[in-house]
Length: 579
Image 1 (cartoon, helix red, strand yellow):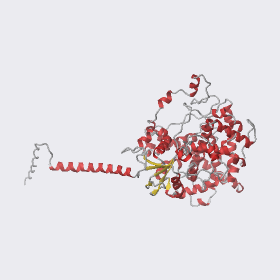
Image 2: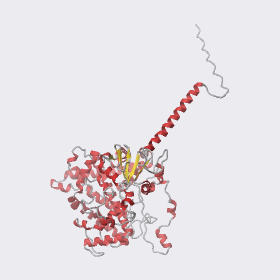
Image 3: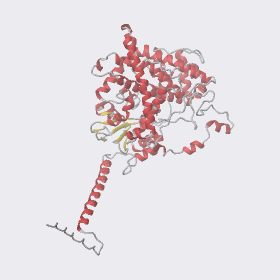
Image 4: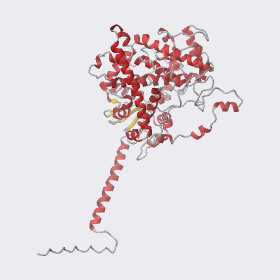
């Protein structure tokens, strides 16, 4: 049989004369528009819910899509001052939200801080947001873990801070390192020069450049003549100035020298290593560590930080610097393991004087912990921040404050001469452990500089569970709980109307020691010490000031050792530990 011919399809319907669509097209369009409307409504409701989570607390204006991100980026070059302005405008507790991040609740209320750091301490930790960003740098060290892992670090490291170890181990190392630093300062004061590292690498890419776009006054700063030129124009004798690549006579970069000084001290105290940073201006590990700190600080404000590390040039440099730090730390670990294994039993007491030896000696809290080379590498990275950066920044700002306040500087020098028993310009000698407690005004001057320039100027934790602060603020689970010691030290309600002034007498005149939840610098000690009491030892940090009457007695010489900026003032760098 022949095949059946195909059936002719029906002709299409004639077009409608009114230009409208058929029933099927109308149905598809209706479904599409309904889906788009539902998606738009869901988006609006999601943002509405995000705004309702604020619970009525104040804060900067928020964009419907980017929240507080735009305002923060515009002020990233002055982040601490921006946060302080928000505290003054919105009260002790306010909130903001960065796009792609949990909401951040900022507080300067001492009762809220007592709740976070003591009463509900177990409910606030670093959280995955912090741990994942810093794991490549800090690993599972004390500043990057919570709960049991944090307790092991804290318990073992506390053995480094007992009175006997401080008197017989820490103080002699600090004195020896101070001698090397004083030799360099005398060279500068006598018209000589010392070597400095080349300019540091900039963290500059498509992700981090955004916060630079809001830098106001940059053109004016570039056109403003430096103080030396202004003095010459007025017919005055100019002061020595920092010129960028080199120093004029009698002028030095004190901050750089103090960072190198503390790296040498920490190397001996915590790791038993002679790093010789004072004798090596361009030390690779110091350059790598500074770059990694600045880089990871930007990561906290960038939601696509993982892509940034692999797709952008700064990410490649970051990974290279991390490898430098790893090589440095693993070399120390291998040497310390070898030295500890070869030590005679009678040398056990000496071998336990540094931090790594405390971990290697088998502390009772480490029996369930694998003390691997990676674990000890993380210990080294965390104590580089704890020992080098925070103390060097504290010393830098203290000398900066003393250089600007001649009267306070003279009182510190007079007290040093009285305690040491030397005349003006007399001979030098080391402070003994017993003499540290006699430096009352020096301690007050140091505390006052820490109040205005705290080394850890901002800090935060993640709320594990929903919580309510003493002031009634409701904190949802997963939100950031943040505090800004830089702002708290400048709050009139906490420190009086003269809170912006540098006045060491406020610590001498006070009948009681300030609360650690008001003077928040002490609150940071909770991470390191089981008893965060700054009065447990007589002024241990003041020993690192390297008191020398022949130096502090010459106010102009001290002022000349401070690095001058183009506008005659100091700027605050963007990192985790420096204001």
